[in-house]
Structures are given as C-alpha cells and as structure tokens.
Length: 38
Image (cartoon, rainbow, N blue to C red; front, side):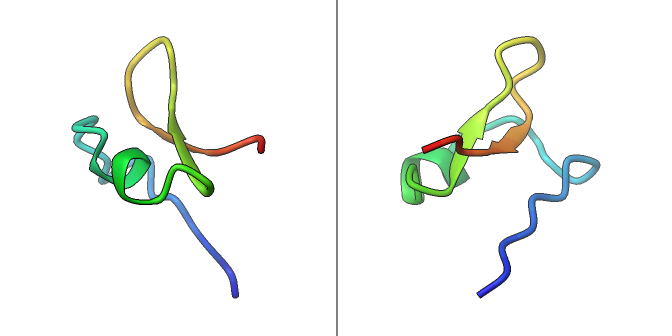
C-alpha cells in the first residue's frame, strides 16, 4: 500500500492524524499533514 499526504490540499484540521495516527502526524509549524515517523 502506498500512502500519500497532499500538503497543498491539507486544511490543517488534524482529521487524518486522529483517524490514522500510525500513518499521519501534523507539522508543528503550520499544522499541515506529514507522514508519521513511527
């Protein structure tokens, strides 16, 4: 499976990080989605 985070479309609401924290996190600076380091 390939997981892609579209940072240009990200609204910074954190729903992806809440739904799938094993895959997504939020950038500390602007709240946009990033791939989780776990």
